[in-house]
Amino acid sequence: MTVDDYPQVDPSLPWMGASVLGPRSMKVDDARAIMAAEDSTALALMYGYARSYAAVSGGLFAAPAFALMFAYLGWTEAALTALVGVAVIGWVVMEARRRARQWEAVIGARLHALDCSS
Image (cartoon, rainbow, N blue to C red; front, top):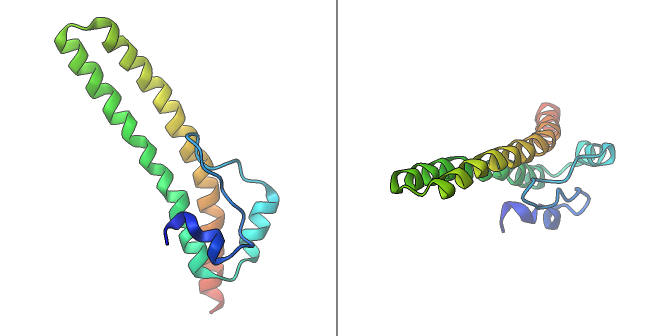
């Protein structure tokens, strides 16, 4: 079982979705469903899934490295293309993390509430 299997543990939890831009935008009904959840294992898996979107930031390191390598080799057009890629990747990373942090905040609040009630 992996973190994206959390709906199998608790089918009442909403599916965050999966895309390059991160999880889908959170709706109020999603937050209500999370705040009503009782299964801390499913919530922990869901939290881990939301946190996994931090991995998309790897492109922020790869694109500048390619730009430097291309510039060193004298491939100016390829270097400029890689630098444009940095901007695009940066936007994707920011959007993925923005959406994921919304999910993380609600899941974290519910886990905290469950911890305080036990």
